[in-house]
Image (cartoon, rainbow, N blue to C red):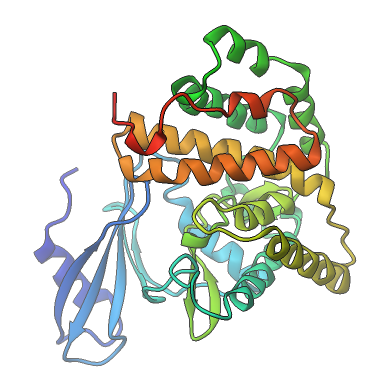
Length: 340
């Protein structure tokens, strides 16, 4: 299928965005992220309705791309803030959606009071984390992405070794293979998989949180599935895109723990947070290696040092995954690496 032309997108915008019947529409491509989806900001001149809207163009290469629309309903069922979808053309793989704005949590990182936005983000995440999948309507349960189980955790670990460690670690291939198959990695996956699950965002990081009118809105939530809430919390607090101090992480985690105790009595522990942080940071490093080297999107390489530092901090404080800290010593300056 050929990609839609700009003229087609403009004319269809006038059909599907409320109040845009007589508007002149300008398109601006939004270049962001590492997925096979891309977005336009459509701005209306004249007419009624919203000033702008977002157009999503996606492919069928990833199973979670069309899941965005059912995931929107999942968030709505959970009580989380979610955008309005004006129109979804499943055949053309196009959607017109409410524009939540240009400012994400990453862009707010230097603005006071940033921790207030983090607390509101954790509140929004908790709307998901309080809900087991079984409480959703049957059709929404069926639309969820595969749950976090031991196999998925082990896949994330393999992704780290294949896409990151094999490219950057000072360890030899033989050392990496021995570490990869050591008992501690399988034990980590099995321990996390044995814990009760709730709904999770799956990619709960600063660039997937839009700040509008002082409130946090989740985006890019097509990966919603069952898992541990600590995975989302770790994704946010150990996000390589934003540097939080140890004290800030502790304050925010304590806030989340109190929030869950007061709203649904759930106990969220630092031990499971550390386990989830190891998993999430290994997954992130695998993604940076794949996108930065494998796909030639070199901008992702600049986030590797922060992700490594965060993972080293978790390993040092938790004692998890013996030998991994040594494997994180990199043979090259990552920022200078080029695609191969």
